Amino acid sequence: MQQIKLLLLSIVFCSLSNLVNAEAIWGAKYFPNVELTDHNGKNVKFFDDMLKDKIVVINFIYTSCPDSCPLETAQLVKVQNILGDRIGNDVFIYSITIDPDVDTYQVMSEYREKFGAKWDFMTGNEQDIIKIRRKLGLYLEEIQDGSNNHNVSMIIGNQKTGRWMKRSPFENPHVLADQIGNWLDGWKAPQSNRNYADAPKLRNISRGEQLYRTRCAICHTLTGNELKGAVGPDLLGVIDIREKQWLYDWLKAPDQMLAKKDPIAVMLYKKYNRVAMPNMRLNQSEAKDLLEHIDSETKRIRATKGKIFETFKEVKEPAEDQVAVMNAWVREPIVESDIHAGYFTLFNMNDTALILQEIESKAYGKVEIHEMKHVNGMMKMREIEELVIPANGKVTLAPRGMHLMLIKPNQKIKSGGQVHLKLKFKNGKTQNLVMPIRSN
Ligand SMILES: [Cu+2]
Image 1 (cartoon, rainbow, N blue to C red):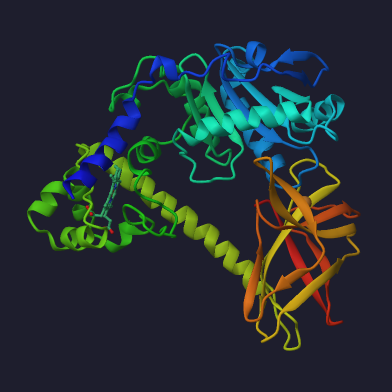
Image 2 (cartoon, rainbow, N blue to C red):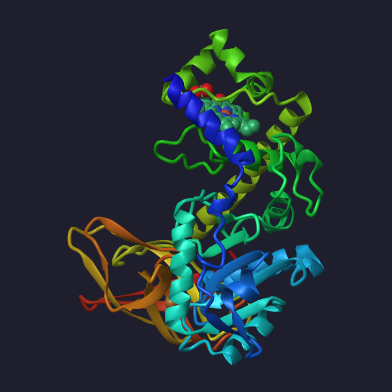
């Protein structure tokens, strides 16, 4: 019991100030020094030219990807805009294709232009790229994954200090820019636990958010969906269920609340596997900032959930429909494109499985159902010929997973509009569906 606590505390506090053993720094011997080609057609060496002594952000994309890649690229453009002219001077971003057969350097160059990206887009020999991915992947298993997402394809690192981490590109771009620009950079001199507040301000995220991400997110979620086996409770809405003073007292000294046998503290302590929240010696103003952050996140998330619910209500199901449809939407493309993605959840209320065989739409040249499959450690898409919706079950198409691949639109795909689809099932029946267009 005491051991668990100690272990947790050491995870929380030591990971922030842990020193990398010099021998553990992967260098020229570790990374393959293979040749890649940048978007201008210039050949460069992966280790010597791209990594050596640099702070880098590496993500893997392919230009024909309709869904996560354009989003990642657009997110990185935001990071680029925050970091300004540090990009290419002391921070280097590389987008490497995993589909080099299609993504020649000219294709990469065009893609880069479309998004207004200023960093380097690389192509090369497929085997070499796989080698790079393997090395980065192997590496990453031994370090923390702060992103909680095992499909992320972005790595940030500082070759000189040996500090590398997987990040989700879907993080707040200000937080990413901060980590890339300040934290990785400053890591040469290990930071104390408490100097986060003095860190140079590259961004305008609130101190509450920064505190939350650095001190609380390790044990808590703030989403409304508590994960199984979570260390601490999900904090969405906690402001509404506890007295304000209780929350202040708790944040400042949870250990004392427990020692005093505060009934809520005792109840929580029992519920969460008897692991106690550490006393982090927060002062009044830090506690206030944290509670404000939790409150504003709660409001923001509830508002977006409300929006999803509204979409659900818009879709009406006449009695003879094959499936009930929920959360149907089409994502407005970020840049003009021949392909984009759509999503929905289909519920089959029947006692027999249904098979969706074809989707037609006047709005598109073609509509396909795609799934994401791991190929050499990278998610790639594949067409599914028949989508089986199990009896009394459901199938969900959602961002970064299965999706509708909407090909060659012949109308403007703009937020606020809608597209009509016809689902054709193997049993011969059809069902019409209206999909609203949204940006997220
Ligand atoms: Cu696809």
